[in-house]
Image 1: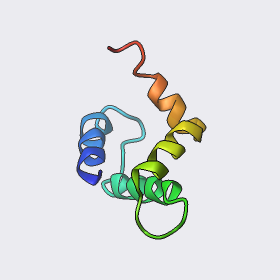
Image 2: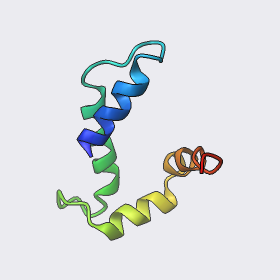
Image 3: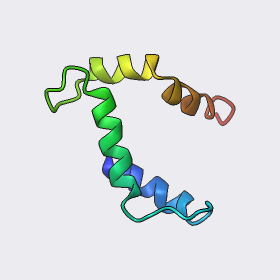
Length: 70
């Protein structure tokens, strides 16, 4: 997840204002996993991932951005 997020920040970061801090991808991944770890056991299983993706308004809005891309 960190590798994917770092790649996204590398691609988009140079085009955003203000520019993205170098540690932003780490912070984003940590926040993301904390949000998804519903039972706080330090592990995100597929059921927690799916449940969070289906209920979280920010994730839903982000995914809707890709509807017209494909």
